[in-house]
Image 1: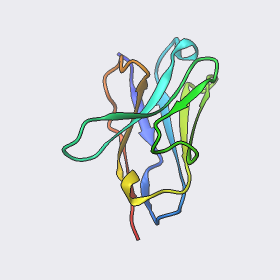
Image 2 (image 1 turned 90 degrees about the horizontal axis):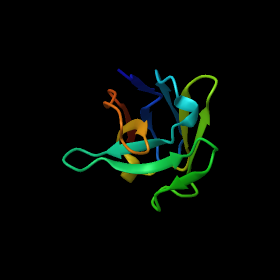
Image 3 (image 1 turned 90 degrees about the vertical axis):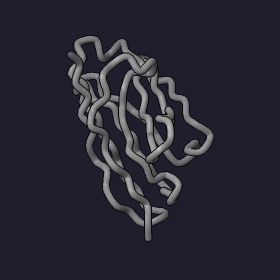
Length: 114
């Protein structure tokens, strides 16, 4: 059973920054494409950023240029650096494989508000 543990969320003012972390208990983490997703209440869970095992990244248009996904294979951890946060970035953030292969973790709440 793969466990995904997200952390790093919080309340931040517009224009601020946060860095999310996701620790994965996954033996083949280094060969797994990973992604960060977000979900607002009553809406579907959408992919916002993904990273291949080789470090190639892809972003949703709404976060491109503001968010950066990265990974540390030695720590089985994927990160999401979020800069220039906007109120519309408010959501619960989750990590998973790029193919949503694993059970979801508890997520971490990001609230952008003045």
